[in-house]
Each structure stands twice: as C-alpha cells, then as structure tokens.
Image 1 (cartoon, rainbow, N blue to C red):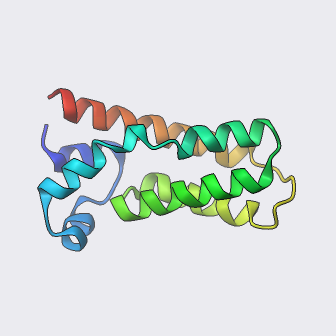
Image 2: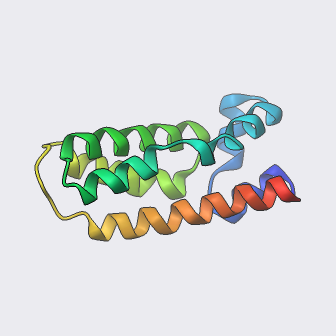
Length: 117
C-alpha cells in the first residue's frame, strides 16, 4: 500500500497535502504519529463528562491536526463540532460525534494498514 492509497482509503486529499507539505517522507512521519494524538479521546471523555470547555479545545485541536494532515474526511465534522461547541454550553453533539467516530476509526485503520503493508 502506498501513502496515496492510504489517503484514498481514509477519504483524504493526498495531492493537496503533498502540494502543501512538499515531502512524502514528512507526510508519512507525521501521519504515523496521528494514532498517538489524544485529541479524539479527550473529546469523547469531555463530552461524557459534559465539560464543554475541554470538549471545545479537544475538537478544535482535532480539527487543526486533520486540516494540517489533509484528512478532510475527519476535518469536516470536527470543524462543524468545534463551531457547535464554541459557545461552551451544553448542546446536541451525538450526530456529529457519530460521524467523527466513524471517520476517526476509518482513518486509524487506513494508517494501520499502511504501516503494516
């Protein structure tokens, strides 16, 4: 599996990421670190605890990481959730969290498949 195949599997934009970061080896190094990023887990925990400030910060961080890595599949719902959480008040998040969770697992699986290829 190539890095481009990995991006295709996760529904991300390889060409845009390569154009911006200009190095496939840099992209590879960075995406292989993505599974260790704690933003998604922090987001889930904060929402469970109804801590909107921490949830907003975690969603914002996840959004930024995904934008930098070209993970549009995960960036879109993360950006939408960030805006929904911006007032720092309890709000409906289940719909977006379902999409984020699906895309997060899809992204992690693609990275694992790439790493193990």
